[in-house]
Length: 285
Picture 1 (cartoon, helix red, strand yellow):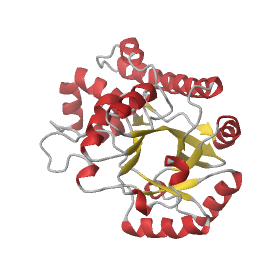
Picture 2: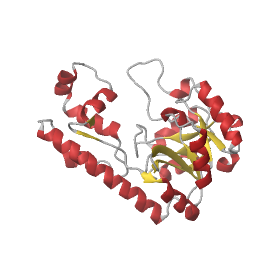
Picture 3: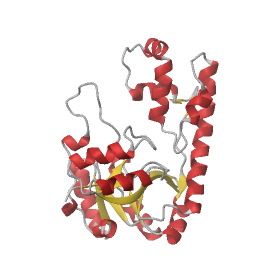
Picture 4: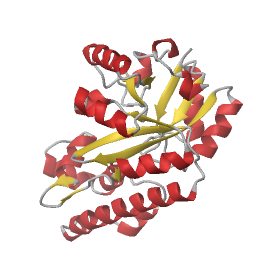
């Protein structure tokens, strides 16, 4: 059975609304899906409603930026109480912190003569401030100057981010991280499963690290991901069995590439089948 347990919408850094997202995955034959927007649950109601219309089982989901000791990583959370007030307070505070960082960078860019309406831009993002959408706004109002400074008529998004939002002279727009200990404590109240997200993407396939996370409450690992090589998948599979972890899979879908490229999204070459995911019923049942 085809499933997809990590999807992103316009409520965070995706480019499709929850409704458009469900319409897309329905065409891929997906039967179970989770909307896992970054540090927000704002799109879940629309997602769940539309899934029911398309005969897709919705899983409550969330992707968090987490810190633990000297590590920073992404964590997927499924099947929790998404209306819990403490959770909403934690997410809202993380959003406020990131907006504050973004404002300082935009103020410096404004001082340098770029065309920016800071309040208009920031007020658009009431759930999560995604660096890719912020970059789109900046690009739309400053195309001529950016092209000149980067010496590129068609700069990629990452080129613009690296030059203006990850620049030590201007500022670095870091994510707003939440402590793992705080998440574990809250999970005892509101339930759900905690899954380490695409660990091979940031070289977090380390046995000792996983052992520590399991001891404090990690439930599983994302194994099938377009970010993973086949060698990474094989090793994750091995360690997941050793630690008795749930394994999950996803397309990590954000957008269609556009610009007439042959490959538009990972679903064209990458499929997730539940039969390859150990103990997946603990999440999807």
